[in-house]
Image (tube, helix red, strand yellow):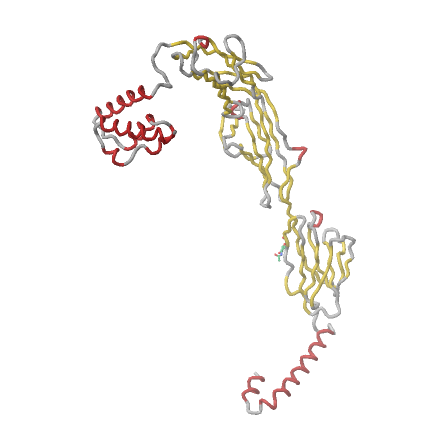
Length: 422
Ligand SMILES: *[C@@H]1O[C@H](CO)[C@@H](O)[C@H](O)[C@H]1NC(C)=O
């Protein structure tokens, strides 16, 4: 107000420095008055902000004070009454504690590398009489971690047995534990009442797998979380052991001589079995130009064994055995190959293929269906040598309906591409 009226006045330029000088003098006196601490008692201007700090990080409490005057600010840990610092001196022997202040108004208590023992209330005090104080709470949070002694490791169990998996996690707040299967399959919970429930997630530190079956074999993940990252998980392998079993889809396989025959056995075994084939002579079959042995692992305990006998001969007629052997036992199954008479030859000369092709085109015509591109392409694929399969058909040939013209074109293409392929 004074300033405004002064600046409006024509004498402002002259008077302003004078007015400012008077104001300044008043403020100066005011300051002195405050610092004497007589009329103005120190007071807190804001409450201490509570802190939630993950273990290992640093924390700073801030105590905001006005009119401190000649008084001093101290920090005390409220539960232990341990004095942390007075003014700018650290009293505690804890090397992680430090203090700082700015302008006698902001008083900081620093705690580095927070530990769980630091959790609690911290009091900012001013040594007035009576003493003034306010509290700040330090919450120390701890991400979950497994308690090794109380957490299961990989296990082996006979089929039908009982499995108890435990996962104990420590953390603050207390973590909760849940389970799931690594392969995404259901966990089967069997109650004593006989009730069975299938769940994708199971909550709790203890997971009981009652009368476990081979389908429950696999990796189980226990996951502990308490809202403080990172969430942790542990992979526990559950191996279910049982005697090997073989299933044979075709125990009698008929084939003409000079063809390739494939025999097939499905094995279930855990621990994993050794799988092999033997001939009627008892000799083990190994991959050669004559035989091709293949073992395909379909799951942890399922295996498909195949044996391809190439170019069937009279001496191949008879019984082959597939055998599976693991530490628990051994099982075998027989497959008998018998000869069926037949002219069918898989690797036949080109002339034979043309006849076959004519039949195919003929039947397609008889059905009254228009030959589409796809069909033509398939026919061409069957006809053409491998190297020329891609380029045999063009748009024009797709529209031709007479089988004779088609065959001519295909044959021409065939003849053109044979030299190219060579
Ligand atoms: C800090 O926490 C305490 C105890 O939970 C509470 O009484 C107080 O109001 C909190 N202070 C602030 C500034 O939120």
